[in-house]
Image (cartoon, rainbow, N blue to C red; front, top):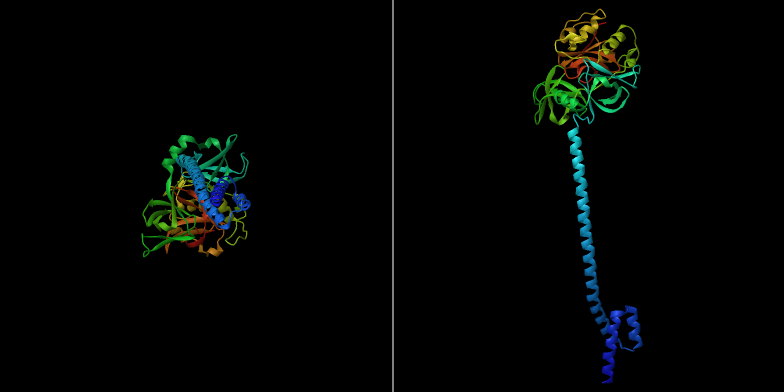
Length: 383
């Protein structure tokens, strides 16, 4: 009986130790009480059973608390993220609504022909570009009577009195903007019809902007100079555009240069200089006035007439004058003719450095372009 009492007493003491003491303390207590190995094993099982209930409950409560907090944090974080996303979307929508043809602070050239873009905000600063009539620009800031602007690849200063801004500029832009197809590959064919089995009218180079006449899923009808054709929709990016400023650095052409870059002088260089002075002028189909508007052959006809060379008012007829030169022999003042095959529909004046000046179309007017923006048919030297 005494032994039984001692066993029960020892078990009770061990249970109390499990509740209030650590594992090491229990082992020490059982050792001091002289409990046998069997009872120690029994106590260990009891401790684990009791501990599992207690620990599991604690883990459950702790886990529940952590999970609840994590869930609240996730919800809070998601709410914050959604709020930020909504604000970002609203800002983007507002920015998009306020943007016209890529301009957020739009200005439009209010002139008859073109506005000089200068390197500094003063009258005697170098002319670095021409902003044609009705062309768009981004107004960066203002210095006195000058606006600091960017347009196309030109950045400089223009007189603020000739720039329309604000709501009036936006209204004008809606009327003036043109649907444009910008070539996004190295070269692309302009075809006579919307298929790959027809005649290739021309090859156009990367970044060239073509006026869109009709949109389709696979083919886009475009205008290139005075010609019309089709381009595969995969090779162009469509957007609404305003006229842009054109780079203009007349000092580059003072001495003139041939297609290889070597310098030349004389009348041919002078022709290039004279032609460049009309950059930004208007294009008018059938026009022959350098001040009121010309078409491509009207432009070359009037420029050459200033140097005693009288050409007919037709690009294909002008190709019969002078002598033929290769593209490698081109010098400033030479004429370059474009079209498809033997058909000639456009003419330009070579100004050296791989560039031409020409009366391009009603959108761009008289401008400077890469001489090989499309495939030349032939080149003639008339001086």
